[in-house]
Image 1 (cartoon, protein in one colour):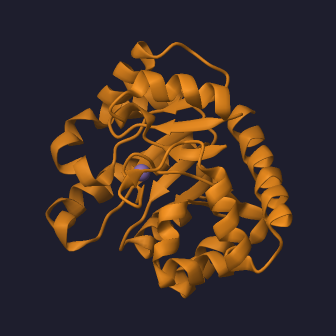
Image 2 (cartoon, helix red, strand yellow):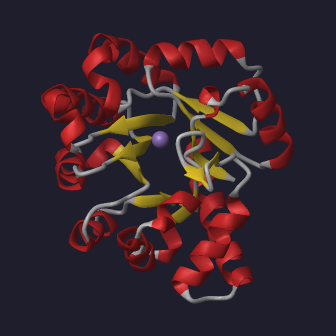
Length: 244
Ligand code: MN
């Protein structure tokens, strides 16, 4: 399974989509804007095995802020929402206030709708993300994607019940390996983050779960079979929440 993939952004999305349906029991296709969600939903045939969700990526929040109402409307129909979140890195500082107002609206809307499952970007902004989630305890479930905060931010997120989607590319960072080692083992699921995430110069594909299992197994110091069944069990539970 793959709980965070930008499948619509590969060079040949239809071919990747076709293969993802064959190879993966489940792929969560997160979009980066409400208009992209509408276009992707219209372009791809429906499959039980792929969840396409509306989002508004913090990296493009500056240009796409005018699509926020469309996103809030789309959220009515979708249990899964993403990619959403905050990016506090220098490159996106200029749009941080806009990012915050968008993310606040998404979290409030999730609570208003009775709870949503959010795939969340939190680069250099984990504390602000958690603070916003804490304001609306009924927002639903947070799946922190490629979490790269501090260990204390990880502990706060874990204490709040957050899930974590982890993929092969994040293991290149020593900090991320330490974080994965400290994550609650019953709330970690695989992701690819393809085609943005790369390994050896190649974009990761939605069916890279085996690689994630190997890296998680080494990081948790457990046998590969144990890591595999652990991630599979978690995946089944999160999938159930997405389908409820
Ligand atoms: Mn992403």
